[in-house]
Length: 156
Image (cartoon, rainbow, N blue to C red; front, side, top):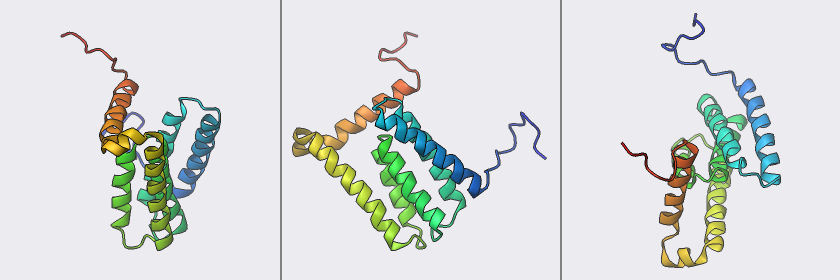
């Protein structure tokens, strides 16, 4: 049995039902922050992504909860501005032959719609073919800021 504070044992995953409840709560929180246009929505969607990814790990792609979790993870990655992660998840999930065609189409549609929205938002960058590179740099900068690292390097 695992002792409290024992770091040698990996944390046990909660059952799918418990994770499903946590996902629902996290989605409601993220949607409320999104509706209020709060910057904290990005972090809330990252939490949803983390939970959906864990749920996808413990459920079958063929099951309704497993398919929904996979689509939800891709959606949360996009909403948390992690386009590269969404693309990697799509590729990983599509490698599973059990993932139903309807879920594959749903995931592909999400990524396509997100890409089209980015192109409409930044037409000049899209026309130059620089959109992905610039948004990747912005994403990396945001990640550095969220890790507590400042704009200016610390002198050694």
